[in-house]
Length: 127
Image 1: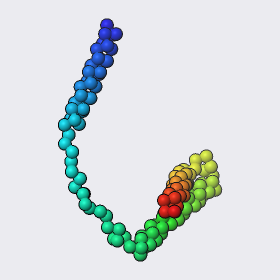
Image 2: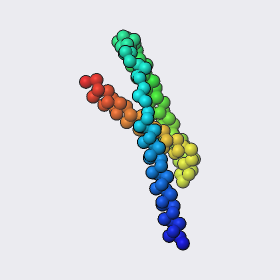
Image 3: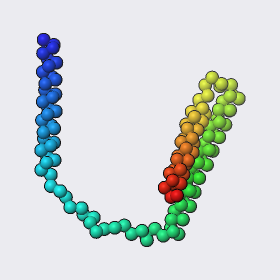
């Protein structure tokens, strides 16, 4: 009895799959091509002047520097909290300090590795 149920379910799944494939193929066969609304439109590269590009580069690099500096301070603060827990005799349970140190160190490592990856991509693409 159980074997017959499995066969019926398998047949039903295959039938549903075949119907869906046929409906999909029928829908795509009757699809009308759509004209490109951007025909004749080209981007204007004069909008981004070298001065604006230099300013954007400086702003982005300063934001990245501040982010890395804040993460470095967060790592030092987490290490300070772990040291305070050790001096207070809470060696077995580091508490929030160890969690802060761990998460901020991971974030700093990810940002530092992203710096190298983005720098490598820019070096390769800009020549």
